[in-house]
Amino acid sequence: MKEKNLWLSYSEQELNELHEINEKYKKCLDKGKTERECVDLAVEMAEEAGYRNIKDVLAEGKALQCGDKVYAVCMKKTIALFRMGEEPISNGMNILGAHIDSPRIDIKQNPLYESDDFAYLDTHYYGGLKKYQWVTSPMSLHGVVVKKDGTVVNICLGENDSDPVFVITDLLVHLSAQQLDKKASVVIEGEKLDVLVGNRPVSGNEDEKDAVKANILKILKDTYDMEEEDFTSAELELVPAGKARDCGFDRSMILAYGQDDRVCAFTSLFAMLDVEHTKRTSCCLLVDKEEIGSVGATGMESRFFENVVAELVALNEGESDLKVRRALERSRMLSSDVSAGYDPLYAEAFEKRSAAFLSKGLSINKFTGRGGKGGSNDANAEYLADLRHIFEQGNVTYQFSELGKVDVGGGGTIAYIMGNYGMEVIDSGVAVLNMHAPYEVSSKADVYEAVKGYRAFLKFA
Image (cartoon, rainbow, N blue to C red; front, side, top):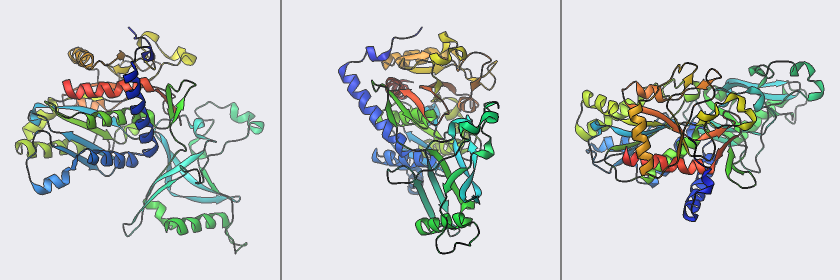
């Protein structure tokens, strides 16, 4: 069953709200191109909405009451926001969980070198991507440099019109006969993704070895007070330069970097900040490292979320390991992650009856994984029935989908990790074209329905 194209159903009032949400969403995409930037933006928006850092609440030692709003941050790359409900937290929470990392090109720790009067930064790509898509386009550099004395230098270069940009070069087509005979997976190799950063030698010493590299180091010193060794304690990411843009003559879509999974992260955040009084505690969890397996201290596999819930239980009901486990097991979650949008140009990869279509509403994936549902959470039918009722209460248009044909491919989310606690979890997000490419496509109608769906979930689940 597939709904009609949503653009045929909206009232003038709904179209105005849709426009406002999508304009806000595009601004968030522009400000949040890395996981650190997303967390900074989420903290800013949360504090404007009356949320307090849990560290300050813990320092006061006061009990949390219904309506209290707190947030916790892990290593500046993961954030969890909570709004306390009428019921004790041990009765469970309604959780929206999304990831804020996206495929990109990371700068290595000893990166700067010169070759034949060109200066480069050595790189290592992050997440699953088609490497050939990431060459010849303008790139911007985002991240932090932390010096030995603890000084943090924030870098964002390539986003303003007056900024320089960077590029990963490719072999010209006139000389690429052998290259074009290679498989797509190796036509551009990982070690060929080094980024071009300079060609001008330092002035005043024509005989200096690696004079172009020396000039880059001089610029870094003058601009950021940065030495070459400071790269070793830096986190620098190359991402596509430029702003999120309306796509199509009709402006019905958005073309932007990082919509997997920030289209679900920002819509979850919008819903969390919109919803006020609820029976159960509401939570919005935005995590790092999903694109590389949810590992590490800031990934969903870490104990960060569990530890924060333990702190909340202690502030709300008193310390109790059993109540922490009850809070997690009795929770319900939408793993807010994108689905593969049906693309008629590549129809052979999809099973049409089970595909997610743009402009046809929030996509619900009962399971993800690969092949025979490997690595999948596979939600219960009872939970699906409850969600159908919840979304209908919120007047939300939704569709059921899978990630491509059986045995063609697949993908994973954070759902199975949260399912380990025994909670009800299902994947629910926005259909996206060009997933993991430098620029991805979403429907403004689906962005709108995602906000509506996530609001309804927090209110009624």
